[in-house]
Image (cartoon, rainbow, N blue to C red; front, side, top):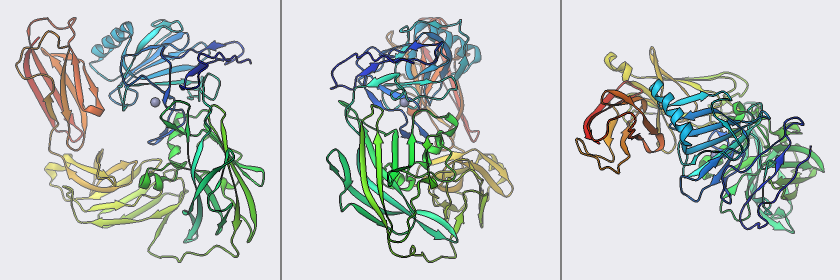
Length: 576
Ligand SMILES: [Zn+2]
């Protein structure tokens, strides 16, 4: 396999994309071009830790403005069209002859022919949400053919293009590392601190705990510990690093996708984020010191593989990354970080075991230890929680607190202290509450996080408990939701005449507690496409002259229902 690198820009000042060709298989060699024409730079890199997942592509900047044309990176055909109020929003999938698929997310809109096709499907199904697969004949594409416009649709916090390439197994690829694209970048990763974790043994179970956080200093192109070159530990331990990567000319910081740990010159731990499976991406929660992420928003990557962590990025891991030394024994530790442009940095230090055995923490009999390899159940008066095998990455302490009803609850408030990381699989909670039978259908189990954000969970009554599945820890209680969604016009007044320049009608649809479950809009009694943007709670209807009469009086009806079954209807007439 041969790879030719073709430099588009010699200047390293901007993080310019440098296109290369990729030899995928010997029979099916295709070349990829950048998906946009402007000099490109990144605001997000592959493999970054995001909420409950690893970032599966790159985020390309568009200068804060929507509407930049987006082109097929290689020849192929549109194989899937997705339209949704969250996630990638308006997204296109392009299948290529080598079995790979390129993905373009958060588009403002599709190219006209694709948009018209998607509209037909949406009207035929009377659904804004669309997820359809297409054959190779519907939209065959040449390389560089325009497929859409970059935007901010779905769960996006600013205009950009999310771009990814998946291999034939639908694994997203680190395209900057795999010679598909390259970035001009000479800046190695930087290290902000080293964290040492040791273990407490509670009721016979070792539980990791933060032991020491140590400053580092740059020294001749590498790093050393700021306070002397030896760290003394008390028993078995592993390491964590607060680290980041920068790219030439980019104001953003990125993750580090390649790391090795050598103990006395022997490789003892490595990870490389070059590809992964979508069904393993939530295990990324086990990569970080989650407590520290919650507390200080710091992402300390643990050079440690928790027993229940099934991420496939790890290599050569000995004893989960744990270093165990004999009393007084000393070992040399060398950690090497490498970014996707092959810039490396190192931290070297010595680790020394203190004399004697690790100090024992006194056992508190009231503490309950959750074992990662078992089903765990806990029950107090009025509350029960079942934590299935596979929900925990490592054993942890279980602590909870019950307080009287508050936050509009009709039950006591049961706060489960977060055991290290969010559950990988849903835990089942049951809350007892006295609710009149007439309101059973309106009762919802609420999970409130540490910042007071509530989310209502899909609730069923299993006498005498209201039960729900949760993938978060928090405070659980029951609330009664009898408040229907609120529907308010945003850019028009009832019974008005719209100006000829007005292209869309916008409603804001909000629900107080349980959230919008379904909605539908009608113009003159016929279903109309209202486009839902979840982050802004807005519903946009773009006036479609092919479906409604111009310069006429129209009736608008919009209904929305929440998860607890409360619904409301907005009606008005508009002249347009
Ligand atoms: Zn992205």
